[in-house]
Length: 125
Image (tube, rainbow, N blue to C red; front, side):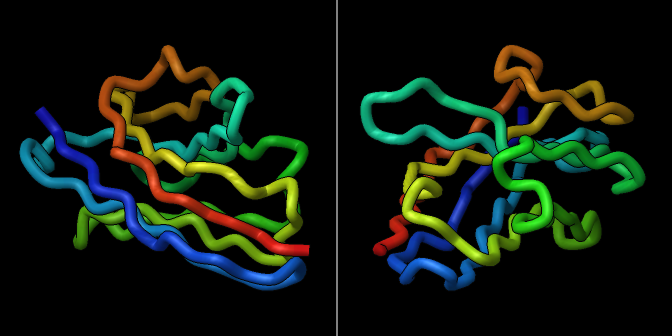
């Protein structure tokens, strides 16, 4: 079992930056791939980014490509989402996730086994 805690909640102005972190605890000796999803109020959860265990494979949603960067530090059991050039439409609760299929990325929420509790990102215009 892996527990995920995502942090980095914040309110920023349009064009600003924010970094989210996702710290894993529990069975962290096992390899896992990671992802970030978000859910805006009244909308379905959507994929943001994913990274394999090695970091060699990364996948981004078109809406964030070129602005967001997913990375990981396996020694710290932490995954990051660096968000630059933020827009009001990026406002949402962001969730980190982990999947046992560690060598591949996934843009499907159903492909993940563990979830964080979510952290709020608000971008003002």
